[in-house]
Every structure is written in C-alpha cells, then in structure tokens.
Image (cartoon, rainbow, N blue to C red):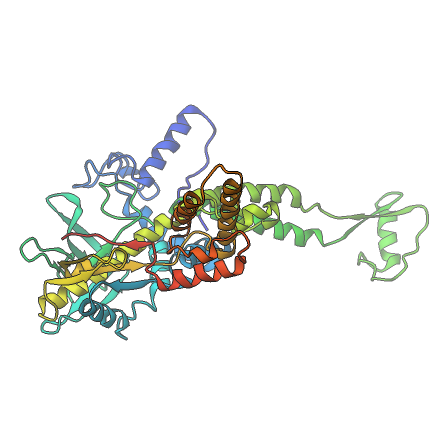
Length: 493
C-alpha cells in the first residue's frame, strides 16, 4: 500500500526539506488553496489554484479520495485498522445498542415506526452505518418522504458521487444543496436541498443530509476519514511485520558452506565423487577427510530489531487513534490496573465520538418527526413529562426526543459497589470516632451514592457489612430501567 502523504526521497538539504514541506501542505490542503494541484499528477500546475478555492483550507479532492480508498483497503486487509474501527464501533453502538426515547406517547409511536420500518431498520444498521462513517469520513443520505403520510425512508449514497456542496451565504455550517455525479442519486439528477429547519414553520424540511463530523476546521465543507492521520503509520506497521515474516521464513533455510583444500580441480573432483551439491538427507551421515570442512550457514531474522520498531509504530498508531496501546496488541506490557480500566483521555475520546454519533441519529429521527407533523399525524406542540424531574410542559414534537447509547466508561458494577462500600466504611469510622454525627454521615452517603452511581439511593444497602453482589445487582437493575445518563438532546426550538 502506497503511503497517502508520500513523495520521492531526497537528500537531506535545507532546499529539499522545504520542497517536501510544500508538497505536504499541498496534499493536506493546509496551504489554503495557494497550491491547488497535485504535484504528483502535473508539475506544470504547481503554484496555481482552481477558481473558487481561494481562502479555503479544504483537503484536495485527490487526497480525500485516496484517504477513502486506503481506509477501506486498510480495514479489509490490515488487522490493526480493523481492530481500531471495530473497537470504536463496539463501544459506541455495541452492547445495548442505540435507543430512541420520546417524552410523549404519540411522538414515541412515530419514532418507533421510523426505527422499526423494515425498509429503514435504523436500530439494525447502527454498526455498519457507524463503520462506514469512520472509514469514509462522511455519510450522505437521500430521503424519500411520503407526500400524504409523511413516512420517511432513506438510502445511503457514496460520498465519492458528490460533485458539489453549496452553502447559504457562504456559511460552511449552513449547507444548502448537494449535487451528484452520474450514478450517485440517479433518481434525481438535480441538486437536492439539505435538511434544515424552516424559519416559518419551525419544521425540518429537505431531501438529503450530509454528515461530516471529522472536519479539521469550522470553515471546511467536507470531512476526512477517521483513519486518515494514521494510514501511513498503519502501512508502516504492516510493512515491518511483513518483512519480519519474510526474513523469518528465509532464516529457516539452512545452507552448507563446504571448504575443499586445493584448487578448482579438487573442488570439481569432490563434487563429482559425491554425486552433486545436494543437501545431505535428514538423519544421514556425511563422511569426509580432513581436507573437507562442512559449516552450517543461516541468516539472522532481525526479530528483536523489528519487534522494537513495530512497537514504536504501534504506539504512534494507538495515540493517533485515541486508544490504549494494550487494547490493540502487546497486552503483556500492561499491568493489571491499566488493562482493566479505561484511562480518562481514552474514555473521553471515545465518548466524544459517541456524542457525535448520537447527535446525528437524533437529528435524523427529528426529521422524521417533523415530517409527521407536516402531514398532520402529530401536533406541532405536545405535552411532555421529564422522566428525571417529573416536570410537565409543552414542547415541539421533535424536541421530545432523546437518543441514548451504551456507557463508554468501564461499567464494572462490582468495582462501583466496592468503592461505595469503602466510602460507607470510612463514614462509619468517622461516626464511631465522634468526628461526624450519624445524620451527617447518612447525608454524605446519599450524596456520594447519587453522584458516583447516578441511580436512586437505597439506604438498606449502604451498610459496612452489605454484600458487594447485592449492591452490584441493584446498580445493574436500576441502570437498565432508569433513563441512561448519556443522551443527545437539544436542537432548534
């Protein structure tokens, strides 16, 4: 696999280093359109920029397409790339999956119809949709809405088929229309309007959506694949391991170096009398005099050097992917505490990506709700009851929705229970020592429970001699029945 940002090697001189830097900023689009042509394709175009690209630091289309191609190829052929993507998919959409809940029964019915529609199967395609988004960096959906029923269905379109994306007033946050090349949205050759809220009706309207969560700058229009920044490192890691395997296979071949005293006639005589230069059969005896010496030769595999090199590259890959290194490989190098817990930066990285995914799912579902409102199947304003506070109020139908996902943090209820019991024991010791009163300890215990676990307090379980299994069971049961803490809410009212 050719490196995404590779260029021919040059002598290490200041001039050549500068040339390499220029090529790199061209390939990544960091030059803001100052060099708008691929130097590998046409050297005569370097220094020029296409019309309409001034002031934009967009990734050039050729780099973007290469990143998509290499990302898909890496997932299908590189086990480390597959491990990275599947790990994110498992934490974000795996386990209990993604769920859509509404604070109004009528809205919930519309949501259920949209999610369980056999033509949509929103819940069933969560993993493959997320995997496609990570590999391609974008997801384009074309909607088909029933004129009288308001029923919404959709189809994915390969982002490569997008020929142009226009904005409202030049604002990259306000997408206007999406145009497709031939073969993209064949049913509608014209530009499709992007879904957005109509200022007059307050309802979402449009025919297409473009999800682009991995933009580097807020001025970018298009997004890059999730693996783009580590593709070269993944390729290097695979190359080091492949070379090690090849050399290891070669090292298994044993070569005999035979020295015969005398000149070429003596050598030829030895070969003739021996019957050739074949290798002695296994288990056989080779007899010779003092004028002939046999010495076995084998090539070193260089396994130690390659293992260290692969480990260094994997460290860079894991860091770029936002995952702990021992999740991908080399678990022997991590201690038990590290292996069983999720480091805070890693947890936040994965949880941040999950937040993006939940917001996208919520926006798509709100579009279906608004289309139902436009068709008269729902009122624009509905009565809702907040499941946490019990507060009743009227809100827009689309805003009655919350989309939740599985907890990203290590959900080990046994650990949670043991920590809480340690807190309980400490409070009991303070009470016995006369430092804290019993009522104050009860207040502190309840506060610690609700803040740490996030579920209602149960005083009977908050005892120093309580069984950790009982507490763990209560935590699991409550978190499965109560509304999850991780939600994607909000949007325009």
